[in-house]
Amino acid sequence: MNNNRGLTLIEVVVSAVIVAIIAGILLSTITMHGNVLNEGTAFSKNLRNVNAVEDIISRKVRMASVVMGMDEAWVRSPGGFSARDVNSFLAYDTLGAVIGGMRIQGSVLQETNDTTSWHPIIVGRDTIKTSSSNPFHLESSRKEVSINMAINTDYRGQIYQMNLNRSKFACRN
Image 1: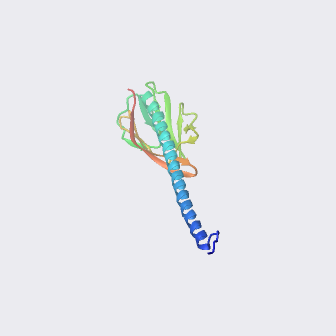
Image 2: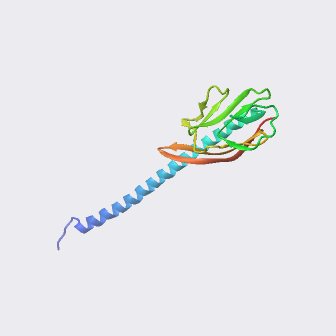
Image 3: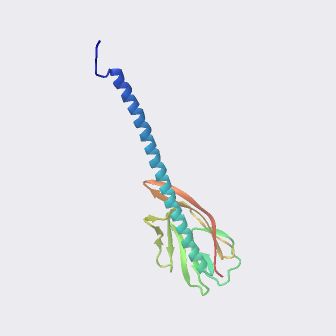
């Protein structure tokens, strides 16, 4: 009787194939988990950015008595205007003083409190960007603003987009 204690070449090859299959399954599972985690993180950042934009616009409009396009002159009781989509607006108090405004400059969403200095809206480390050209809809009464805007968030070199559709904000008066 021959008592060989080694492994044959076939046994080694079969073992290597089994280890390779298990390693491949584990690697694909880890990769898929990483992708799901990235998607979830990007969605979370995008949602945070959308909520922040809604909050900022809501505060500006609610403090105002009238909201006008940048090319429109302030009037105490607007009438005869047509509803229109614009890329910027100014919010006025009852005396005609500007209390805030929003605009799209390039692809960056900016805000102002006095029209002399405009600043990009930054949430966390993200500068808020949009691919929308005229996202603000001014009602004919100039007492309401609706938003139809796509917020773009860059996460690890990939752009994620979330729509802010027809959120409507009314002036206090």
